[in-house]
Image (cartoon, chains in turn green, purple):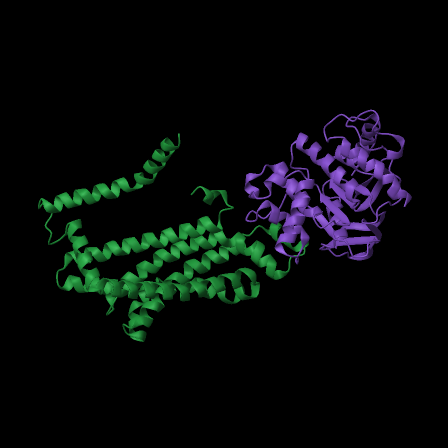
Length: 261
Length: 285
């Protein structure tokens, strides 16, 4: 019995990986038989070799950690401000009336269109990248936090009041947990935008980081390094998603929609 | 003292009879009749004088006088929009009166709490059942102490084994029992029930009614039940108030001994009388 269920579970877990593995194998075969020129598209083995070399020289880790730090700091700044304003505007009518219209107007500007302006302001230094990531991350976090707080069941809030909860415990025990599913939606969007923004910013103007590594490799026609950078971006995106899932499972375990996800 | 003495055999008798069991012939013996006078040291007495409540110039309650002795079980019935829920909210202090006054008096040393049970369970979906019950304790107290008290209240409603569950995994009747435990965990002096059984199926409702009656008899709080269901009012209450256009139109005491049997002729007659009154309101506008 238990071996059968274990087998089924293993198969279930491996199924999503069938297609990626098949693509990789086909790609490897096409590249090694010369069907695709390795000048334009290196074989997976070539990408792995390039990765090994970059890792051994330390270049990969330096660039990776620089990119990661930019992403994290930009995310914390933008997400933090977005979260705080979302809370403030969800809880206080005055604050919302004061700032929401302005924020909605700014939201309609594609944040990547600010790149020329940002380069003029900050040059190609760290601030430029942090600024862009922060702006990009801000809006999904803000909008979803606000929406989450607004959609908290008013009957539960009334119950909390009637049962003598202080404003603080009303917030921590009723309002915030109620808003959490929506806040997580914002978090997921924000993580996607975080990587996107960072890639664009590093590709256009940088002197370090993964995007810079890829652009430099292009100058020397090192296709394998270019592809390596892209693969790493994909991996980072997947990792961010996995972390969010883990958090959701931990904090939204009460919600039947997440329990079996 | 006399009242307390009278209560003992009554409680003992009710505990012996399981909720859906047919009561034995011996059970409704003479001393079980509840005296009209207050008998509770924990209950809150309510005195209302010339109460008035307007909402945006529209009068919902006008010139209402009422005294509820401590420990009494009062049912408030009436048509939708007659002001019965507003009356309940006023007594609880969720609304403030436009005129008149509401006095609450209690013999207990510490001011006992007022609690309400809503039509919906209103449990926090993100808190385990035991923590939902602990919400009823208000703030303060250690975590272990709160949990212990909550567990006791859960045992009272027969849900001990569900303490660690999420509310989403419970049935509608079980959720409402958790809500009852939450309302009772602080041993309130006044329990307001705002159509708490309206959304349940008929059998679950009968079980819940028996449970509420049993706990009320054991704890001695004052109970005010707002309901659409006249049969429910007749089965549970010492006294039934029919509210009509913001006033008390009918005030009847139910002198049928407990435990009451469903389908009892006296109860049926009383139910018919109250229904007739409610239906006659509709005739001329």
